Amino acid sequence: MNHSINRRNWIKSSLMAVGTMAIAPAFAMPKNKALAVYQPDSILHEHIPTFQYNEARIVAKLNANENPYGPSPKVIKAISDSISLGNRYGHGEAKILLDMIAEKEGVSADHIMLSPGSSDILEKVAFVQFMNGGNVVSADPSYMSLMNTAQKLGATWKPTLLTGDFQHDLDAMEKAVDAETNLVYICNPNNPTGSITDATKLKAFCSKVSAKTPVFVDEAYLEFLQKPEESSMVGLVAEGKDVIVARTFSKIHGMAGLRIGYMVALPERIESITSMVRSTMGLCVTSLNGAIASMKEESFLSSCRSMNAECREYTKGEVASLGYDIIPTETSFMIFPLRMEGQPFMKGMYDSGVGIRVFNIDNKPWCRVSMGTMEEMEIFVDAFKKVTA
Image (cartoon, rainbow, N blue to C red; front, side, top):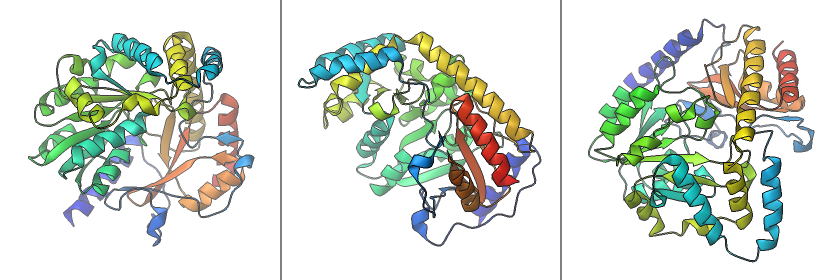
C-alpha cells in the first residue's frame, strides 16, 4: 500500500514540476497483460496498438528515436566499398575501431568491447551479473531492457522513483543497494522521459557506489547534448572505478539498422563477458567500416545535433502552445501527458500516417515522439492538433 501511495505522490509532484495541466481521468491497463511491454511492477507500461495499420502509410516515423539524417554520405560510401570484403571476417577492422574509440574515450583498448548495438551490451551484462540471481537497482520509469533480462534470469528488480524534476533519485538508489545487489543501472539521459541527471551529483554517486557494486550508465542519447563530454561517466573508468558505460552508433550516428555499439569498462568487466562469448564475431565488416568512417564525421554529427535541436524546439513550442507541458529534454525525443485515452490517440495518429509511442505512467497516458526532419515534425503537429481537437 505504501508503494502505491509513493507512486501517486511521485506522479503528482512530477506533473507539478512541469506545470499545471488538465488531464483526462486515468484509465487502467487492459486486462490482457500481453499489451504491457514492461513488467507489472513498473509504473511504466507501453500501449501496443490494438488496431491494424499499414506500415507503408506511415509518412512520419517518429516512434523509434532514429536519426532521420543518417548514415552520412561518407559512411554510406565506406559501407558500399566494404561489400566486396564480405567474404572475410572483420577482425582487423574491429581492431582499428577499438583503437579509435579507446583514443576518444581516454582509455586503453582493453577497456573497450564492441557489440551489435548497445542492446546487446545490456543483455550480455545482465546474463553475466545475474546468472546466479541477486538484485538490480534502477530508476522507474526508465529503459527496461536490462532489468527485464535480469528478472527472466531470476534476479529481483528494486525500482526507485524519479524525483519530481525527473532526475534519478540518487540518494534513494544508494539506500536500495544491499549485499545482494549485483548491479545499479542508470540511463542518462533517461528513456522514455528524456531528462538528464546532474553530472556532478551522478559522478559522486558512481564513484561511491561502484566501490560496492558495478554501476552501469547507459549513455545512448548523451551525444545529443551540446557538450556531451561534460556529462559522461566514462572518465571514472579511466580512474579505475567499477563503472560500465554503454554507447551506440544507432542514435546520433544514424546507424540504427547497422547494429554497432560499444562498452567502456574495467578490463576485468570486459573479460567477464569475452571469456564466454566472442564479442566481435557478431559484427559484420560493413558495419565496422561504417562506424570507422562515422568516427571521423564530427561535422555531420554536429549538424545532426543542431537540426535535432531545431526540430525539438519547434515541436515543443507547438505542443506547449496547446497547453501541454513537456518534460525538459536535450535528447532526440520528448514526452508529455495526454488529455485523452492512449489507444484512440495512437490510432488517430497512425491513421494520419504518424508513428509515435504511447506509454502509461502510473495509469496516465503519455505521448513520446521522436524528432524527425522539420517536414516530419510539421506533419506530426498537424496530425496532433486534429486528433486532440
